[in-house]
Length: 279
Image (cartoon, rainbow, N blue to C red; front, side, top):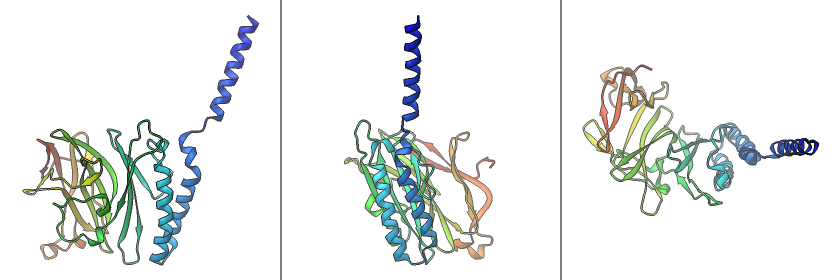
């Protein structure tokens, strides 16, 4: 009996010692996270764009070193102050994005798409290269690759079946200039080579079938854009100018207290104006 008690005591002590020594996955990246937070804080104080870009290259390298490791995939990285990460509901990939404000009021966006490594020791990643400064006019029907990306800070991923393929709707924010911001409903899919592509026509909006929807509005207001589970719809503020005099001048646009929506029907997100939604 004494031997059994001694064995159980040793087993308990050994298990307790193991738990106290076990390193949680997030702790493996503590140094990198602290360094990234220090760099992103410094970006706010730096005035010269060239110095911002130089410091941001260090952030890119550190973020890349983290997300290459398979132990990082399921980490939310919430302790990062200015770098956001979201994981797709089907657990296939994650997207990491952040932005750098420039002196002219525009922003440069950076990011990675990280594939779930399963049992591999290294994650396959795709660097997103922002080309939004060169993308002008109506680009709602354009397809972009990772190297020709319209930059945004993504905060929600909605997978949907389009035929036999899965297309992901991304909800994002784009800080546009000194006067306007943008909210974006983006579509993303993986091509035959397994690379992420942005833009496939699954949105029927105002009578047009398009690959993304872009909303421009005044920097002085905020705009609702999110998925509502009760309505099973993407809901968003309807934007309008305060007077017809400012029609088309988006620095005056803001919510008019009505809400529109998109509902997924027959392989498309279909527009419904003035839905019954309460914030």
